[in-house]
Image 1 (cartoon, rainbow, N blue to C red):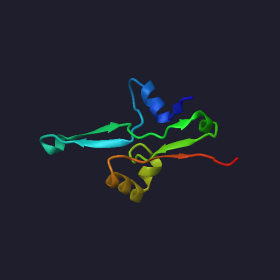
Image 2 (cartoon, rainbow, N blue to C red; image 1 turned 30 degrees about the vertical axis):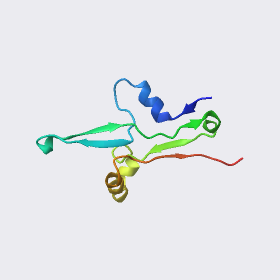
Image 3 (spheres, rainbow, N blue to C red; image 1 turned 135 degrees about the horizontal axis):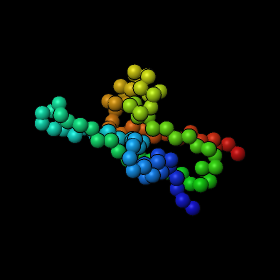
Length: 96
């Protein structure tokens, strides 16, 4: 039995192009205006094959990659200011 996370699978398959990210770190430089950001996929929700059968829906609450997060100014600012990691959630039906 294996574990699964769609974002991890997507990141591992891609050699070029955008990949999902859950963390954003500022890399300082001199002068400060030349600093940059490093983004990485560091946060996961890994689930079993049994739970995969329940059609889970993952979401990374990344304000620059998720239009719903970006469109809500209060949410966007809260996510940016709270941490250098963005939340990862999963909706899953648990009934019968």
